[in-house]
Structure formats: structure tokens, C-alpha cells
Amino acid sequence: MPKAQNIPHQDLRHKLTLLNQNRPVITYCNKGVTGNATQNILLNHGFKNVFNLSGGFQFYDATKEE
Image 1 (cartoon, rainbow, N blue to C red):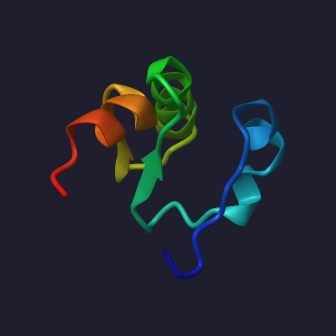
Image 2 (cartoon, rainbow, N blue to C red):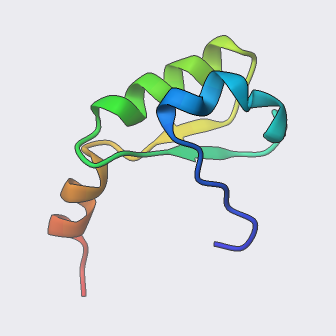
């Protein structure tokens, strides 16, 4: 996706100013736990349009239609 930013969970709190709170944000990880935690961090810092890829990338990859 153009202009997408990959920010690791452990760096997120230090890089919140790189993100626009008014734009949608999608969080995800491999299995879903860290993506959910990241979503909560963003919501707790005033982000409104935050979505998490439930089940993580593994679930998405296993269930996507080809």
C-alpha cells in the first residue's frame, strides 16, 4: 500500500507523532495478540479509526481466497 508505514510494536509509543490521528490505521501481527495490543495503544492515544486484522497474518493467509 502506498505510504504505508511499518512500525514495530516496541517502537510505537516513541513514533506516534509519525502517524496522522485522522487517517485510518490497520494493525496486525503474525498471530493477532500484538496487533490487538497495538490497536489499544493507538486508541488510548486518541486515534479513532483503528482496525486490527483479527487472527493476525497467519489467519488471513490461511483463509484468503485465491
